[in-house]
Length: 577
Ligand code: NOJ
Image (cartoon, rainbow, N blue to C red; front, side):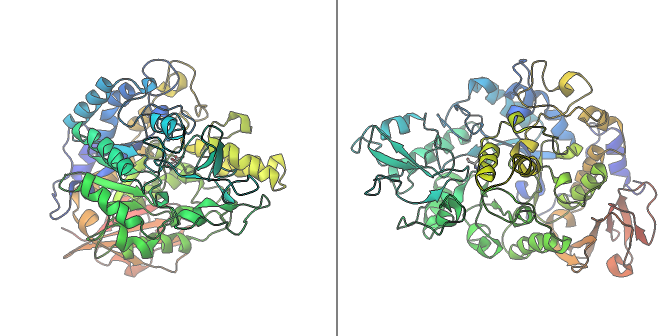
């Protein structure tokens, strides 16, 4: 890491004291210039000894985020919830779950974050509520109550079976019979997560009011959950079965239906318009070709998560069956989003979230050193065009957890996938192997803060196991080590703020056919920065043409060689400013 600029080197030594980044890129909104950090509150920091994280824990750790150059925190749901899906089953859209603290704790978090230039971004789960939400309690009573039409109800088929053969995303039928009302209700996810009926204008108004409640509290925007499922097809018909259970996955039947954009334009008018916030939609089923309708000048969101680069490792289906993939496929997927938004539009850059396995175990050949891998990905994450979203733990290179048995897992989806794999005829060992590699709980084990008990996460009994096999794998140890993944991320973040081309510049792919190197240039007027990342376990010679006349600014190697990249080395070059 020899070639760090003076400003960034100083920042690395005394990062809290040295203001980083001279450039103030013109023309971009604040959320395009910053870094977003995603927090899964249950696993971030516990101040009560309950074994689960809380809002006060987040407030106590805000300086960690400030030092990383974070300007916004996406909080996954903290609303009252029975926690069937860890908060994605909301029982009250305008309150705080007691396990996370109080509304006063939330207000304090917003205020303390603001002092550090950080905005809090809420997660809106508007495709479904919890079945414990009072709206559902009322809706299920009969067919005539004032909220009778706020959920998706249908009669049984003449033989009493479910209206269609759709399988929910967590497994099993997407329909559950309600004795009280004498009808089935639809749930894209768990039976405890009934889908809301967006065709009803009163329901939509209630949702917009809930969003405005949080805007009045001073939040900086919204991540909008599972948004591609809100518009149901005009006709509910059986799909072609894709498994031995005779069912068709609901995603193929209901994602991104015609008419969805009308709802989302209304959402934009009612919630987003005229405010200095951002919205980012979780857009499963929206591919690069659709992005023009979703982001940019005529888009409905400021950004959307497009998942094709994460889906590469799976052959599809109900659970993720691993498949071999090549670096060129990953690059094509990422560059397709870049190209689709190059003239109008903007997207997050992300490799992790609370639903994905850890990236160091996802994007590299077997045997790759996790620290080196983490640095390679961080270099791409923080220099591609778009807003980088760092998921908690990614900045210290957390790997997957070595699950020994399915009983150790909490995640409802992992259990559904395990059961489904058994029903499809796989052995318990095979089913466990699928789930181990792709379980969402890999991302949900507690954050590692220091060398203390439970890595400083809790003084109680942690709700999921804590990684305990590596003394250097925590934020405190990595803060002390100038060569750590964390300090590499801080350096990159610093560089991103210093060099306007890394935020505002166009993105041009280099060496697209290489199966070892991911290389691209960020170009703004006469400035050019080039990222080269070696994803392979072999040394690779560096093509001369990559950045002629450029200076090496950063390398993840101590002694970078002039004409060759070491295995899993990342570099950033730039023309002089
Ligand atoms: C997507 C969320 O990211 C995931 O965690 C959740 O289980 C589903 N939507 C249902 O809300």
